[in-house]
Image 1 (tube, rainbow, N blue to C red):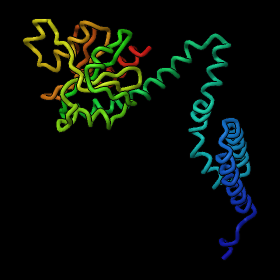
Image 2 (image 1 turned 30 degrees about the horizontal axis):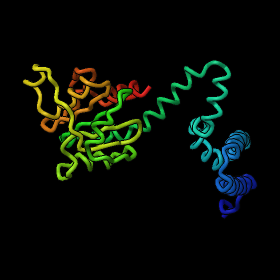
Image 3 (image 1 turned 90 degrees about the vertical axis):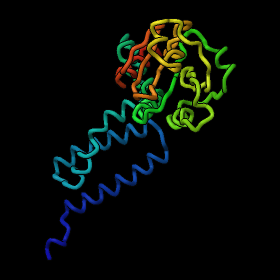
Image 4 (image 1 turned 90 degrees about the horizontal axis):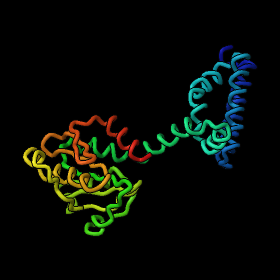
Length: 248
């Protein structure tokens, strides 16, 4: 029955874990960035001590979460890191990483919605407004002015929805309008090749600097129109890059 008798190391191991959980709850309650930083430093110190004194349970626990320490610091102290980098004149290189991350997070629901509609072969026309405002088209449609949401986009383009016929216009990180009627392309070559949805997606880019994302109802293929020209069968990674470049 000796294996049931805890050793001194086991007692220390259990005590430290209990103390660690207690302190974590206090930190969460205070919910401050610097408190979390001290907590991370404390975890780092515990990790080295546990390795030195061979506290196996504690070492295993800390080894499982150490991968996320650097990521947690970057997320928690993003504003402070930007300030420091700007003072070192390295802001452009590193801030671009932060801005691209922010843009990706804003447009992720849009990409997810396009991916879902492409898979289901649900026709859709999404207009991303640029410098040239599309106010006249917004005013003559169903004004929504809502945050970008995958569920909302899918609901709009559901064939049973009264809003599915037409386009939606996105301004920044807001869906401004649905059931938007757009001018058709005047290019005779496109008129012979494409249907109304594609022609409308191309046509609006002939009169403005916007970007049109078109999902084909027949094939599920995703196309992008810019400057009066259309590129078909766009990969989702390429689509995200196009959106990120336009948002700069």
